[in-house]
Image (cartoon, rainbow, N blue to C red):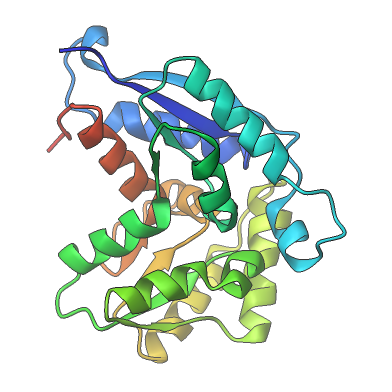
Length: 236
């Protein structure tokens, strides 16, 4: 059987891209180098900020750069493409239209995984950038699955953006107590589980070993589905 090649449209952000590749390798049931997935990784860090553009369309548009990168991955022979950035999925349909290679949708995979694994799931909390929240991307998919959702208060969203941009992206120490407080507020508001809908938040889960069934990591969901589609087994 022909080896499947996974294209990673990365740089959004750079640390999240490298963490995604690390997850794919660590989650693959492989005993030798040759049993791992072949990946072509574009860690294109200069792509304009996605949230900035979503909030203000006069800012530089990241779409043309991401379309060019998707075409480059297609030309490199990739069978599937992933974008390890939830906010970038605001542009998902336009990027998918530009290539024939299927793009794995991190939002869809995350909600589907939560539905399968969280007992008695009725409501999902969404932790994401302001751009992702305003776009309604997760809300629309959650409603499509017949579930309810909660989003942070305005003040908690500001605090979360500080954690994402001024701590994780900046390589600074994360205020884990504040992060867990925001998670707790979403649980108090009726969420059965909380989605880490920003790949920088996935890095927090890794760094602080937050292994909880009520915290659903979008990056892990994307890595899991990538492994399956590329014909490999997930490590037990």
